[in-house]
Image 1 (tube, rainbow, N blue to C red):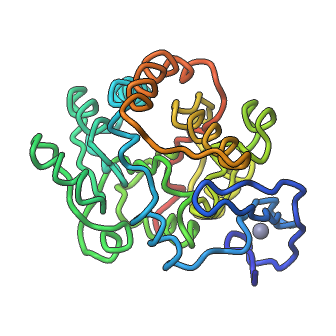
Image 2 (spheres, helix red, strand yellow):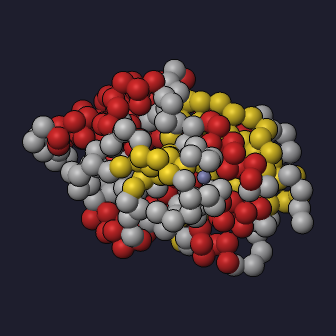
Length: 292
Ligand SMILES: [Zn+2]
């Protein structure tokens, strides 16, 4: 690893934590920048490796089984957003099936989304949810676009260059515009319990791992000031992914049969309330410091 992508220093220290990958059964190292304390997956996978995982293994199907829970979480998130009075328009980056867009529109916040998953985009088109099939990179290069709020829910930890993206995103915000960010919280109780098997490590596709203080530091050094920070519980997929890792390590397999789908759906309808109890995810609202 060369320079830290957040603070540009070159002093790294290996962590004792070695998360298990659910994709290739190997363990990855985590290295910590001694200057800004941010944790990174090591070795850093190539874009090709990541694309391969998304194409062949990333379990989009799981999101469909847990639709009720997704809607519940979207409702919670939308009611959180509507507490910030000046938000009239929003963009949801990686909007998946558009549940959050739907909930925000119900609350009179005009929200659109961007996503690159063809199935999710097709679903949104069919249901009249305004989603454009474009990557974040593509969107940032395009002229135009000016929002009161940009939502990056479980996006930042996937980016090779989170800081550059955050700086570029400022140009797509109105004066005083806000960001809503959700990322896994490496100081969560579940992380302490499950250690290397913790589902939200999700190596190697999660490249950067945050706690409240490293996320705050990244946002402040990218031209934002923090408005609100809180933690919420993870989705049931956190628990299923943790379980899958434990089973794999012990030689078991994790094929998704109809019975398992039914079981996952049922458990998810109870586990959705974990949102109110856990601390697996950090939610941050930040606003632009000043425009250049
Ligand atoms: Zn650093």
